[in-house]
Length: 401
Image (cartoon, rainbow, N blue to C red; front, side, top):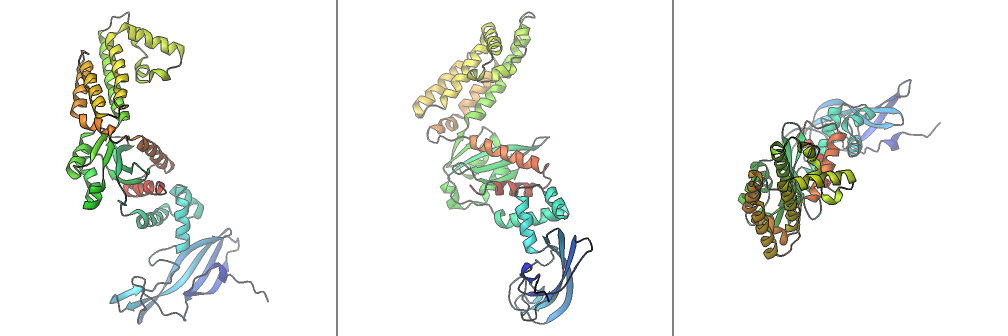
C-alpha cells in the first residue's frame, strides 16, 4: 500500500483532512477538512479558548494551486461563545480568516504578485475576481502602511502630481534625505497639506527644519500656519519653469508687434527659447536663435535674465545671493513688458524662500524622479479609481527607502 500523503502540503495545525477528490481533467481539486478534536476552539478576535459550541457551519475557501489544479477546501467550522468577548464568535482555524474566501497563504501570494503585476493580471492568473484581488492587497497595505510614518523627518520635499485630466492632483510629501514617500493627499489645497501636519505630534513638528517646494500659495499658507518655524526653500526648477512661461508671453507679444517681413523669424522659436543654450547643438537651430535675438532686443534681454536667474541659486552666501536677486529685479524692470515686471515683483515677495537655499541646498529634483515612478505605477495599472489604494501602492513602492 502506498504511503504517499498530501498532508505535508496542507500544514494546518487546527484542522484535519478527511477526504480529497480531483476532477477528471485534473484541473480542480477538492479537499474536505474539519476541526481537529485535539484542540479546543479559540476566538478569532481575542485568541482565548471559547466555551460552548453555538452551531456548525461550512465554508468553501480557495487555496494555492497544486500544480495545474486549482485547490478548494471545503471546511467545517464552529461558531462558539467567547467568555472574554461575551458574544458569539467564529472559531479561529488559523489557515483562513473568518468571512474570507481564500486561505491566508493564498492571500500572501496574491499580495506578493500585486507588488509587480497589475490587479487584473493577477486575477486572470489565479482565476479570481479582480475585486477580490484588490481587497486582499489593500488589506495587507493598510496593515503595513495605513498609518503615516512620521519618524526621523527633518527635511521635506512637497510637490503635486496630476492624476487625470481636469486639474485633478495629488499632493506628494517625501523625506528629502532618504527619498521615502511619506504621505499622499487628494488635491493641492492648503487644507490638503494641513491634514499631513495635523497627524504629527508637537515633537515631530519641532524636529522639522526645512521644506523644498514651488511658489504655490496654498502650500505656503499651510506651512506658515502649521509649522511657522520651518524654512521654506523655493526650488530653482520650478522658478525657471515659471519664468519660461513669461518668456513665451514676451515672444507672443513681440511677434504681434513685429513687421510682416520679420514674423517668419519668430515662427518655430517657442521651444528654442525654452531650451538651455548649451543643449542647442543643431547648427540650423543655433543660427535661427541667433537671428531672432539679433532682431529683437527685448527677447535678447529676457534670455540674459534667464541665465542670471539660475546664478542666484549658485551662491552660498546670503549677502551675495541677495545682491544678485536685487540686481536681477532691477534689470527685469528695464524690460517694457508687464509679465516680466510682475515676475520680478513675485520674486521679491518670496525673497526669503529663495535665499533660504543658502542654508539648505535642497530642491524638489528628487520628487520629480518620484513623480515619474508614480506615473509608471498608474500606467501599469491603467489608472486607479480608489485614491486611497493608489496612495498605499505608491508608499509601498518607496518603503525600501
